[in-house]
Length: 282
Image 1: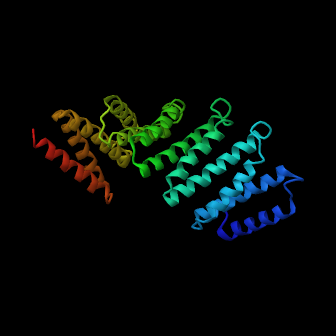
Image 2: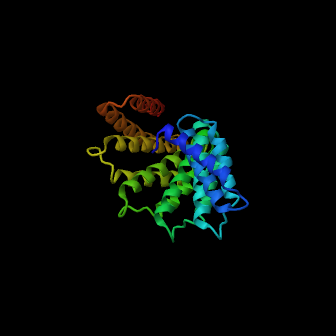
Image 3: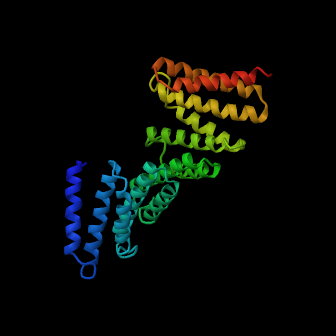
């Protein structure tokens, strides 16, 4: 990636180009310059000049005002990807949930062109972007529906990303799905079917994430299993479920301490204490 001065130079070149190329005479070239300008402004904004996200968005929208879904499908789709990147950066860096929601919509526009059938790799990448934007928004909004929207995107990806072809990515997607489903239940609900789906997804992770080879991934999955068992145990007043949670949190805690992961061990220890207090009531 270009350094800051190179980005500033490119921005200046594109601005000069816009003075020379008229929208009325060469609209497509004018739109290309606007889109390229938007890319460089976004990159500068991501380096700390956050006010440039707004200017980048304006430039990208100008390009989208020229590009046509039918006549210029690749340009149109790539500009929507650019818009998604701008809005994601704006939302992520500025804690702006509305921008994150618009980012996922922008990526979905691009997916009208980059479909699973005609470009599997780009479809997968863009779906990852949608999931990332929705996941970040879910954390910000803190609602069951926001987490379930993330889960729906991840489910779609898992119809394509398979254990046989992309095992590492498959395991990571399963973990993200389990996390989204579990978080959706932290608002007073207990959907047994969704929690069973989360449990299955975590078992998928652990079929690849072993204690010996990937101890931290293994610990995270075991801690998530503890969360599933705890949620079910509390909702059903089920001591057996709570004992499952106790074992899972104890496993995670041991791994975190062995691998010396500051902070993670404290969280696991806190959850283990909570489970043991609940078990003390039986």
